[in-house]
Amino acid sequence: MDATAEASSGEGARHAHGGKDDRPEKKVPLLGMFRYADRLDMLLMVVGSLGAVGNGVSEPLISVLFGDVINSFGESTTSTVLRAVTKVCHNGLW
Image (cartoon, rainbow, N blue to C red; front, top):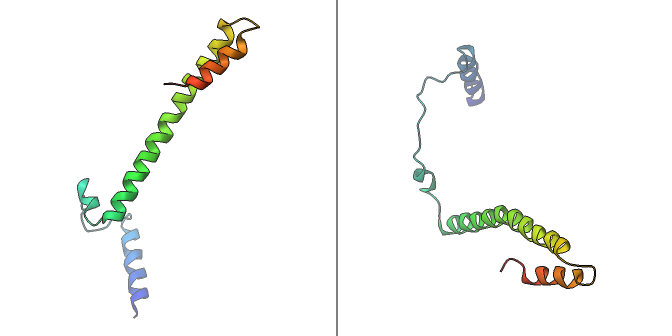
């Protein structure tokens, strides 16, 4: 019998008993997952984390900026609306 047949017969036996494996599950600590990460992996995780934070922060910031633009429409007259909106857009959030 070859290795493929043995593996398939072993899986059939496992599934016959409700899909449970006889071996207990090993739990890995959180920092243990990064044990084999090298410098490139760490760099990519940092860049990905910064990108995720930037992506998450961008929507609320755009909402605040858009709210300020809409408020500038309501607070100005017909002759000063363009200047008020331009002022809000140029100043942004800072």
